[in-house]
Image (cartoon, rainbow, N blue to C red; front, side, top):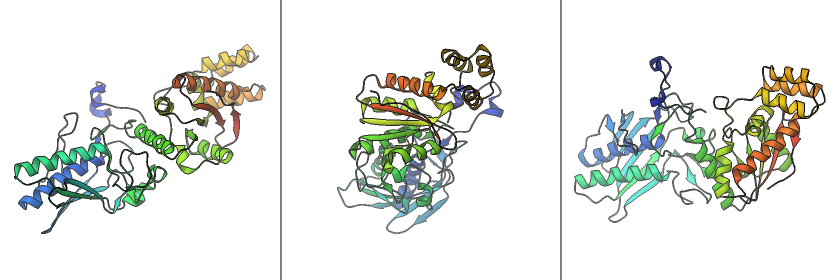
Length: 373
């Protein structure tokens, strides 16, 4: 996933810019504002505008409204813009009811919103999976509206997402111990297309849960093939398998401050070649395999100048791998050692031991380092 900001648009941006969207937290905040207003006044705000942490003021159209003597509901369809977000198109519904005097703002998980069952997350066990920033945004909305109408801000907010339990199967929630549905997320309220703003915090939460559960060995894999293959070797519990993806730098930097004794890094030859070259983001849009660098490694391992030229001019890393294997040069072993060295450099002496495994596209082990810290 690559980071695209509107302020970075090229001159022909009108034709090429990716459209940003809004987080589930932003949608929940807007729905809460409209529902609470309707509960107090009898009228829903539609469209409803909210203030986000960085100054954005998006406006949302209601997709659902229900007014009852005891509660009000408003729903907004999440628009993630051009980001491939699994919650795009989901309806975020906020049911608002007045609470007991002195109860303050309470959050409940309705159908399709998860409940936290493991420690290590920023929300306590048994709480609705509504992250701190969305909670704060909704509290501010409640306090402002209640102040305007001179009533106490004692409100229960129940958030639901039709179909959310099914959507959650495509997220990291089950591994993190968030059961029953999706999380209500967001730090800025804005979804930047293909950004790392959601992925890296999810990696962090995975580490937090692993530490809270007392795990001493975790896995960071670049994809499902390497994850499955590494798991066959080490038999990790599910919560030990961190969804690293391309963000090896984001994972290791967090481990530097929040260490786990051992981590296995697993991935393919091309991805780990980029790590061995010093890249911390392994996405193809943000780092590339340097074929000249690989050609130099071939020379160091006794390869001919002719082979080095073939490597330098190869179309893909896979072609390089095949060329070197044909000439009995074990390039994956060299790449694994160098990738391990780069990972240790990112850790800067943190008490974390690392091994690196490199796999083929069909899950065959190509190289495995010894443990180092």
